[in-house]
Image (cartoon, rainbow, N blue to C red; front, side, top):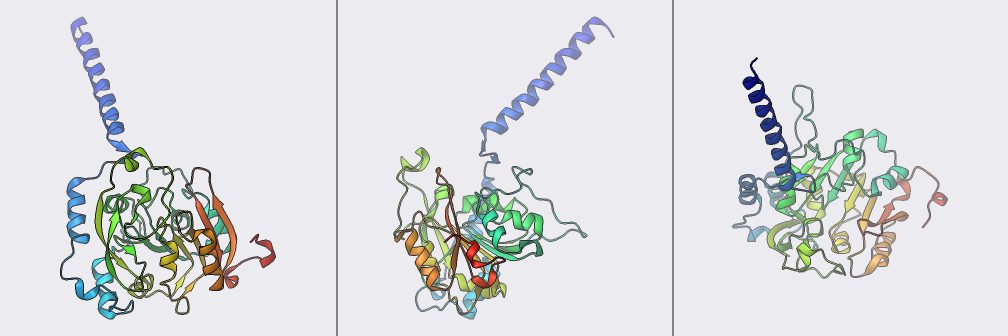
Length: 322
């Protein structure tokens, strides 16, 4: 090889390495929390499919009962995305930001694991589910112990991300109703702080620059009562219900017919509830639940009570600090 060819080869290698570095830098600059930016075409398709409503007035409002057969069919056929199917005996792999993180929750999953036999599988419902990975309270049970369930996320920006995660649960681009009937609500898009706009809650004292300095965008979202989801899925027993909806938790709980279904354990965020943590605790204690734990963090990424039915506990009641 001549001197000129060697020099040219070295120069080409240099530019190849430089190109690779530039691509990596571009990926970093166009990412958010390790996740790729929203595919605008996919977002547009999702928005047209799930967030554009017409002729739905007959299946919304106080006159529509939560067990209305047409309402159940509407939820099942239009607002439930089925779990990813197995491909020739092999499940599609998860597409997670951090495949090495075993439990992305902030401690809620560990508390639930203390009080029930989670190793034999189970059924969960998580709302709001965010992107299906970040601080997910249910991913650990699904990924390692074969649990199945339902992930509910109202914000279309988060829902598009969740579709890519490979979760083996039903997904729903909706919200839990704060009334015992279905309705379309205005929803504030605030990433992990999104909430129903017209529900009275306790706002964060410190809002992030992105959301505190400018008005949050609003999107219309279809909400269903909790019981309607169970009828659509033909489910009566929920092993774990994770409820984190930025202040509407107690109002959601008040819509649930606890005499018709069996929710064995719950984690309920209380920080934004206007009645406070005592309001949430008192209500569920009146329904027969006991507090088995409390998960809190100084950065406010967790402010949850852990509840369980006495019949679901694997240890003596005296073990639990209430």
